[in-house]
Amino acid sequence: MEDPYAWMENLSDERVLKLVEEENKRFREFVGELSDELFPEVWEYYSMPVIYNTRLTERGTIAMYRERDRQVIRWLDGRVVVDSKELEKEFNDEILLQTFSVDKAGRFLAYSFSMGGADEGITRIVDLKTGEILEEFRPSIRNVVFTDNGYYFSRFYRHGETPDGTRAPAVRLFFKDGSGERMVFGEGLGSGHFLYLRESTDGRTAMLTVTLGWNSAEIYTGPIDEPEKWERVYSAEVPAEPIDVVNGRLYVLTREGRGLGKVISIDGEKTIEVIPEGDFPLEWAVIVGDKILAGRLVHASHRLELYSLGGEKLDEITFDLPGSVYPLDSDGKRALLRYESFTVPYRLYEFDGELKLVEKQEVAGDFKVEEDFAVSKDGTKIHYFHVKGSKDNKRVWVFGYGGFNVSLTPRFFPQVIPFIKRGGTFAMANLRGGSEYGEEWHRAGMRENKQNVFDDFIAVLEKLKSDGYKVAAWGRSNGGLLVSATLTQRPDVMDSALIGYPVIDMLRFHKLYIGSVWIPEYGNPDDPKDREFLLRYSPYHNVRPARYPPTLIYTGLHDDRVHPAHALKFFMKLKELGAPVYLRVETKSGHMGASPETRAKELTDLLAFVVRTLF
Image (cartoon, rainbow, N blue to C red):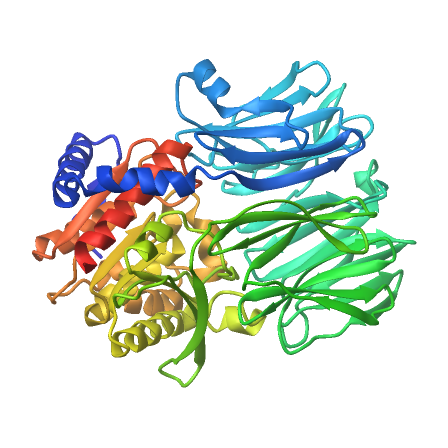
C-alpha cells in the first residue's frame, strides 16, 4: 500500500524540520497568550513535590522525587545524592531521571537518566559513601540487582544483535563483577520477550520472570549468586509475577483461572492456592512478617486486604478518596506504599502490621469524585470517574487509554486543577484492553478485539454529550491510538481532540523503532489475517472527509519508543482534508517525558487548547 508521507519517517529530512518549525508557530498563534497566562497556575500544581520510588536499606530509606524544577534522588532525611540540575550543568542539556536501585546495605546506587526525555540514556553505578562514579554504561542498562560481589543487569538491544545472534529489539540478562561481565540468561529469546529480575527479601533467592509481551509468564528461581542453577518453577499463558520466597516456598500472584488474580504457593512439586480469585482483580501482593498485604482493584480504585500466609482474610483497609495504591519496596518486615488520587499528588505510607502515614502532598479545595457507567455497543458496562469542583459549566476533559493490561486508576493531573477551577470537569474512562476488571477485560480489548476499546470510549463520550457536556477527548501513546481511531470513526462525539505521542499507522508500527515488541498486543501487520483487522481501524488509513473537531496532535522529537512519524503523517492526512488540526512538536521531549519545566509547558499548552476549544 502506497504511503505518500513515508518520507516523514526520516526525522532529519529538512522538510520535516521545516514543518515542525512552521506548525509549532501556527499552534502558538492559535493558543495566543493563553498559555502564558495559564502557566503560573499549572506550575503551582506541577511543582508540588512528587515521590516516584523508594528503596529500603540498612542505612535508611532512599527515594526519587520531583521537587519544583528538578528531580532528585535523596535520603528521606533530606541528604541529596543525585540532582538533575547538577547533571544538566555537566551535560549542558535537559535531563530526565528515570530509575534507580540500591543494595540492601546502602553502599551502592545505580541510577539511569537521559537527555531530552529519550528512553535510551546513561546508567551510573555510584559509591554512596564517597559519591564516586564506579561504572558508567552508555546506552543505559536496566533492572540492576546488587549481590555481595557484583550486580545483575539487563540490556535492551534496540539496534544490531544480541551476543547470541538474535536481531534487535531483544533483551538479555548479564552479571558483572571484578572479572568483567557475562551473559547469564536469555539465550535464544526473540523479540517481544522481557526479563524482570528480583531477589527475595532475605537476599538468597533470585526470582526471574520471562514474559512474552503482556500476555504470558515463566518464573525461574535459584540461588541468587548461581544463575546456572536457576530453574523454571512456574509457567502460565497469562500474566504472573513472583511475590517472595518464605520458608523455602515461592509465593506467586497469577491471573490463571478467570483472570482476576490469585495467590498461590509453590513448594517443590506442590502448588497450593492461598488467596482464591474474588469478584474484583487482585493487582499486587507483598509479604510483611507473617502476613500478605494485597491491593485489590474495585471499579478502578484500590483497597488493601490483609491475609495470613495460609490465606485467611484478617482485615481490609479503604481510603477517603478513590485512589491508586502500589507498593514501592519491602524488606520482609515492612513495606512502603504510594497512594495517589485526582487531588492528591502523593501520600507515602509505611506498613509493618498497621498502616502509618509518613508524608503527603494534597491540593486544597472543594472537589468531588463521582463514578458512573456508560453502556458500550455490545452491552458491556464501562466505568468512568468524573471529577468536579464547586461549579460545573458543562465542559468535560476526558482521558482514556485501553491497552497493554494497564489500569487507569485515579492519578494527579496538575493541568486539570486550573481547568476545574474554571468550571470545567475531568473524566477518566476504564476501557477494555486495560486490567481494571482482570485478564479477560484486557484480552477483550487486544488484537482482533481492539474495536471494543473504541466502542467503549465512544459510549462514555456519548453519555457525557447526552448529559449536556461539551467534550474534549484526550489520550497519549496507546491512548493516542484510541483518540485518533475514535476521531476517524465518530468525530461527532467530541468537540475537541488531543492526541499525544501516538501509535497511528497500524501497518508500519512494527517497523519503526521498537514497535515490533507490541505485536503480541496489536497483532502482526505482516500476517494477512492480522493485517485485515488492523487495516479496519488503523487511523492513518481511515482518514475520510468529515466534520472534524479542532484537533491537537503532539509529540516529541526525542521519542525513541513511539516514532514521531505516526503523529506527523496523521497530521498531514488531516490537514490535506482541511481539518482544523494543529501540531505541537516538543524538541526536548521523549516518550518518558521531559525536564520539569518543559513538561509543565507542554501540559499548559494542552490546557490552553482545551480552554480555547471548549469555552
